[in-house]
Image 1 (cartoon, rainbow, N blue to C red):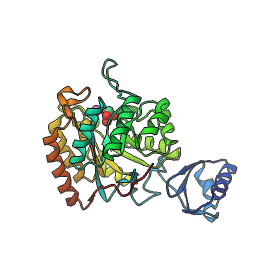
Image 2: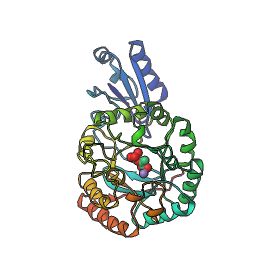
Image 3: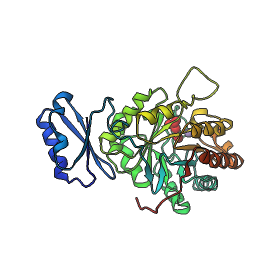
Image 4: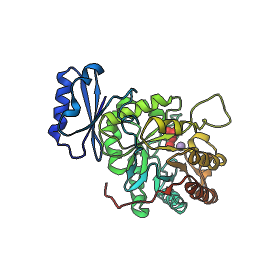
Length: 346
Ligand code: PEP
Ligand code: MN
């Protein structure tokens, strides 16, 4: 069950719900979103249903949710959510283009990538400072230095930054610099990490585990939501199938499927799914047409020299094509480009 409090509900109203549920032997998990408090209830549903929670002061709505994931379920929140990252919307009315290098390598490479991204219409910058690499001998990222470089490039371009966090120990440090925290495919079920990022007040991009089912993915999002953070964007980045022609198979069906099950925004990563530059444009188009709320792509000023994923990075000429396609298809699907709506300090 899920209890949605009224927008102006007082803390004592929330406490009263929690006490009543606990007195009946249930558990109550309080999630504080930007505009509302939601309480997820766990316990004997029949017994919880007798508590008349709807009659308590400050309570807006009490819903029985049939799925295991409750806070991210669309059953309890029929309208699709919009997540704002420093004023840039990601949600059902817009298509947000996020672009940048796979990894932050140098200040020059990061700034050049950001300017390429911005010229193509991107309103957010991506870039990894902590890289979860398959091989321990591969470039692991610049760590905090990379975060500092991203912050400097944000100063210069105004682009909010999304960057990956790979360990629960780094969450506070990454959150100091980033506007949005990314959980990569390899960490989708790192539950300690999910809980830790649920406790910082920054939006999160949760990539789908490469072997995860949609239900497992939504349960991972629920871990974050349960700790009080509902500012979550899901990212379909390809799943492992029998097909070796692409690095992973972009599961385009996941976009509409997830949007029916969950109110969270869903974006697509055509770079990490295809793993090849020539597939980024067609996969981006596919993503937008099936209803993705944005796309996130790798770019690099000199992909041949890239320390990570150069084969999939777009160069300037590719970006012109991508930019045109995104603009045209945004109109086609009846949405707006995602422009920054306000200057925010958060
Ligand atoms: C990335 O976006 O830099 C990345 C490592 O992606 P994924 O976790 O999808 O492989
Ligand atoms: Mn990469």
